[in-house]
Length: 115
Image (cartoon, rainbow, N blue to C red; front, side):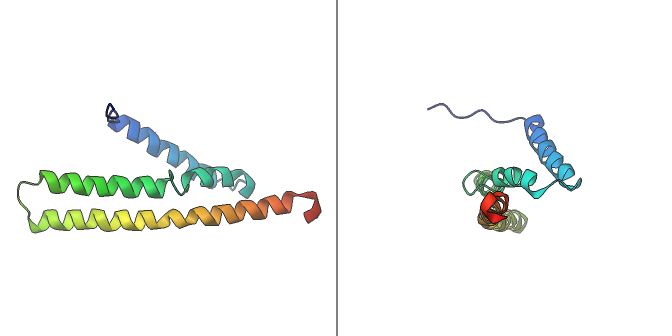
């Protein structure tokens, strides 16, 4: 199986620019119904930002550890910080369930029997 190609710094910048677009959109006070689909993708329990970011940070910590010529206190602190941040980011995946509950509430409010 061929390994995936590495994204460029420009690719990553485009991804963060897209996140900035979402942020800017939210500052315009759109309706919750319009925002929920965005949140559902961002916070997906399998492929959302928290899971991806956690995995990225763990992988970076692993690579730094592998390539470090010598285990210095500074490298150890950096790797520990990356691993701690990875766990915190991954813990945010539970927000996925909050978005699902909001979707359920929004659906119930929009249904004719809810009136």
